[in-house]
Length: 523
Image 1 (spheres, rainbow, N blue to C red):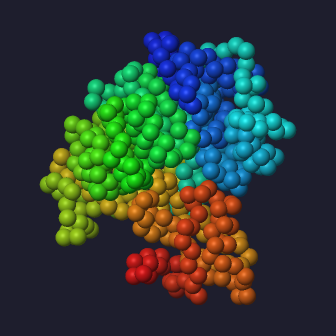
Image 2 (image 1 turned 180 degrees about the vertical axis):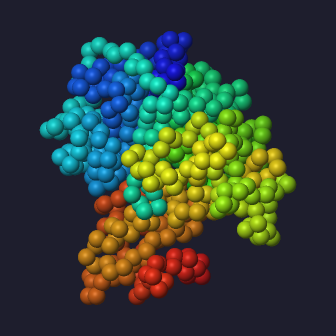
Image 3 (image 1 turned 120 degrees about the vertical axis):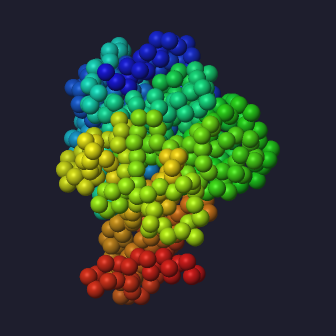
């Protein structure tokens, strides 16, 4: 069995008095955390929610997220993590599609759940935080049972977590990650720092727990290894840099935008991270200048890795002992990867990367990155056609198509150069233009719209909307931005809006987005 909570139970037995979670000046021991997780599991069982049932967690990084996550798994349930930036419109599909029977939500977000509850299978709403009194919701501590529930055994191939990721159409797809997927990833990631994760390690939780990177790599890594997890509900460079110093943080995983904020902090030279022994970047490409500046400032090697929600998440990584700047690293031990063409034939390797892309015919060496391994998802929930498109059976193995274009070298380092799908990666978050475009089309004063990613020094990319106003429309670019902010997560809204008379289209009506990119680059 590879039940993730069985691993954690062993950690608790070995380190009952060690600090598991440190938040807001208080610490919870492993024994205290595990008791609360057991009480949460018992409370679910008392309400008829158990093996195979789904529980949504709609929270920022808080201790209650950790409790609800492991409590749900302890009860044999399946966790559906939900972005706390999402509005009612966005969670409606996730709750309806997953069939979640319970939702743990921040008090301020409970109204969003109640707004869509009648269209879902949600039976229990658990509220966290001040002002938790909502009709139809139970306060978190009141929900917990007086006694605990033992771990429900689950098979390796049973689903443990069902995060949602957008497809090229913008429709979120439920990703079925099994206990084996997560247990493998947790163990592999815990081996990445020199000597692996230690019980003395302090891991800072800057990455959101609803995202597979923060959940699987940081939270699960800490709980598996017996280290201390420091949840950070909201990113603030000054606060986090101060915490790195004061709490003597030893391990930090983050996205490039966070590291970029740190190196550009006005007082960056005054901080000293003497305890920090390992730093890793993922979520989007890490600019070389950010890597080099971080290392020059603090003397800590910054490594880049790669992964996807569907691979739970990391497939490739650079390590302190073995890295190439500009590379996403080598496949994790036990994971296979290759670069293939449209016929699924392997592309030739370069001798050693990274290469000078400007001086190379990339078409001769690039192809799609595909992966196979115990970390690859079981499939998309209820979407047989999407599963057929996502996998290729070859050599007796099931290869997952990442949708990313890259090349590889003879030392098995991989390099990503472009994205096959029309995805925008902004600050480590994935945004598909279609979702934003559909919302824009619902605005009565917008006749036509197209959304593209444009370069951004901090986020890597940001979102720009080209809008054709309706005749006699009374709308401004700021109105459009506010409209999107009201209906979408903050990171999805266009930070630039340009009004145009027409959009460039093909004879079949498709927007020629490359022309919009070219127009933007000429500005």
